[in-house]
Length: 145
Image 1: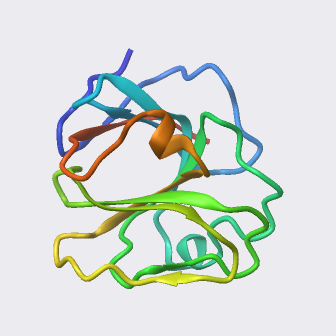
Image 2: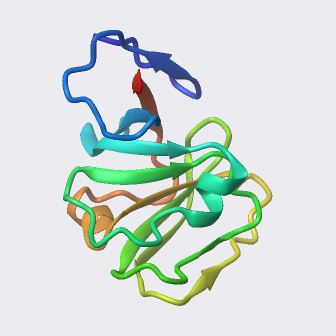
């Protein structure tokens, strides 16, 4: 099992479920509430991955998500087929802004200077996990495939 580091990423060898694409996969936990936001979260680290994000994806499973690293310029839902929840995070993985039920063809430019990462989740997931501004999250890297 991987170490969970506050404000940093850790890596676990021998992850169990392979993915079809070459991507980083992680788990995101709300340490303040003690629950998992996303157990199968893709990381978008290149400009291309961040620009395309969830475009073309039909839906997200309850435990799926996308972490945009970095996401300083805001996010969009152009050509995304479903509403989603978005949490903006500071460099130390503290929640600094939330948007629930962001519908397709919208743009969100958070005004907080420390909002540098964006976690995109299925609509309703933030409410289900009771995630709020100020909560501390951890990200555990599972695999590079």
